[in-house]
Image (cartoon, rainbow, N blue to C red; front, top):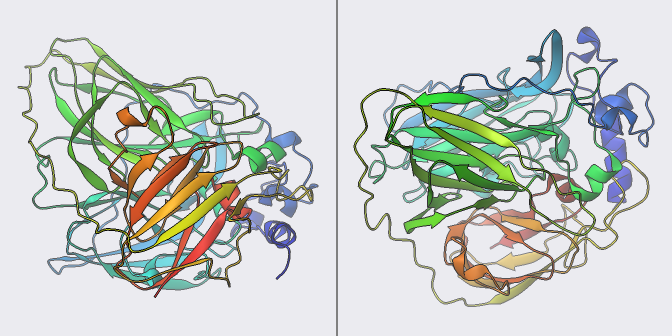
Length: 504
């Protein structure tokens, strides 16, 4: 097999998006990014990739995600269309920023469907690069998962079709998953939410707020900057956070209002340690799975790709503020610690007080996984912490000592047979492990502070593993096929921290 870093650099030099010649992107980001390579810049030149201080104005009125229209007139069916293409956005005054979007927007349109629905999404790839649509966390057939071994070529189309099984209600999302270029397609804008609803949801009466968090780095010309060597080593963290595509939005709510927030970390690599001023967070679901009972937390850590549903009640008097913000989180040796930043703010109106909401008890009965029939070990490592895919200096992001090979099966499982995975992080930084096609249960950790973590005994599809930590996970996958497991720091995934489990 060709060296993955060499083939990745070749792939990056082909990163020419549809319509670029017409719109003229001579000012787009550098630092070895696809745009820079297309313009003839050296992959090692990171000058234009540094943060420039160009920020999007904050304080805009709250913006909800657009909904993807259901084109099916049949009850119990959802049909929609998604097109990935280059587009532009007015992020800063007087500047048209080139981005990637689904159906011309970023984040793309949110998809809503119900358990039991038959879903069909017609996808068109108008990028000049392979892409896929990965339905992150959803228990669907392997051949509909949008994994790297099933690319949709530039100019091509395919339908994704699957049934949402009973018990699958939750907060999911969708994003590209092509081999070696996932990181750039996502940080340039391709991602959005997919909410699967239950007709027996005990929280269905609550108003919902989708909080879809991405981050952004613009160059001095207001274009999305390319990656630096540090980004490839540590994972890209933008210099400003966006909620539903806006920076620090604000909203007015009735005093005493109780809301359900579906919070998504859709960044490439930023860890979001979220605190709430003026209200209390009660975690009711993690990733796609509802907890048996709410868990009250003072801070909520979301690693890249993780989601959480929280219930909050705002103050009962007028003109009170509730502010969601991040605080610093140290995610590993030598990685700069990002300062805290305001995410969004709510202010109570002078209207009538909304009565308190009576939280149901229990919220759900979590699924049971039988006694594991087999134990397998997964070791994550970042030794050497490669100096960048485009830097020609190699890298060492591995699982069980090997980089990703799409033609190799790294592990095998059997349909419906429960297993225990022992997951150990031998590296120097946190790594969020994502397993396709199932929700797994965290049953133990060597962390000293695990007892208060709402993830202990919960089901999820992405779990953070700290340096030196060992986890025990219980899981079973109920459909056959080749599935991915990987670090969801997207630069690490694209440099080889990914494997294939063949479910037979």
